[in-house]
Amino acid sequence: MTDDPTGRTTRRALLAGGVSMLGAGCLGSGGGGNGNGNDGGDGGSGDTPTLADHPVAGNLDTQPRLGPDPATAAGTIVAFEDPSCPRCAAFEKQTVPKIRSELVDPGDASYVVRTAPLVYPWGEPAIHALEATYARDADAFWALLAHYFDEQDAFDTGNVLDRTESFLSGETAVDGAAVVADAESGASDDAVGVDVDAAEAADVSGTPTVFLFRDGEYRTRVTGSVSFDLVEQSLGL
Image 1 (cartoon, helix red, strand yellow):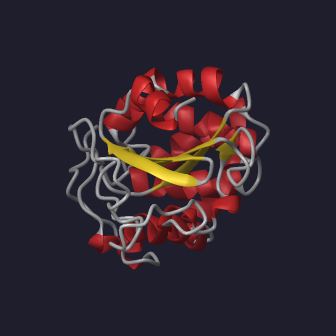
Image 2: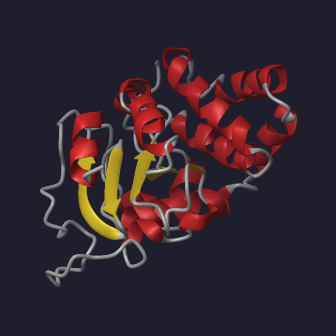
C-alpha cells in the first residue's frame, strides 16, 4: 500500500458524525475491553447496557449482517472495520470464518459489519463503494469486502474505484460503473455517516473493534488482534 496512513480526504472530513474525532486506527494490541461494560457503552452509570441502548446499535437493522436478527440472536457480534486495515484483513481471514461456521451458520449468533475510515486514505472511497454496493445487493457487498481484504496491498487512492468497478462488473451481478458513480458523487455519504456516528458514539479509535453481546446484554469489546476463542468465550456459546 502506497498511501500515507495519516492522510485525510476532503469528503471524509465532511462526513456526518465528526470523523476528525476518530483516531488513527488499525491498532496492533490484542484486546481493548475489560468486559466491565464501562467503555463507552453505559455512560458511566455502572449498569450493564443492553444492545438496544448501546451506541453501536444506531441504525443496526440497516447494516450488513450474517445470521439471525441481532434483536433475537443469542449472541451478537458487531465489528467496525476498515477495508484498508491489515489487522482487519487478518481478522476476516483467521477469525471470521470460524465465527461464520461455528456461531452464525448454526443460528447461535448474528455477525454485523460496520465501517469506519480510520487507516489508509483509499479505505474511504472503498467504504463509499461498499455502501453503494450493499444498497444494490448484499451478496455483492460481502464479495467486495472480501476482495478488498484479499487484495489489500494492490489498492491505493489512484486505483481503488477502477479496481472496484472491474471486480463488481466481472464477478458479481452489480453494475460496477453505477456503484463507482455513487461513490464519487457522494450518494453514499449518509450511509457512511451513520457508521461514523456510531463509531464516534462508541469511542471506536482503532480497527477492527468488535463489540460482543449475549442475550441482548453487552459483554465486552476487543480492538486489534481478535481471536475466535476470545469471541466464543465472551459470548459463552
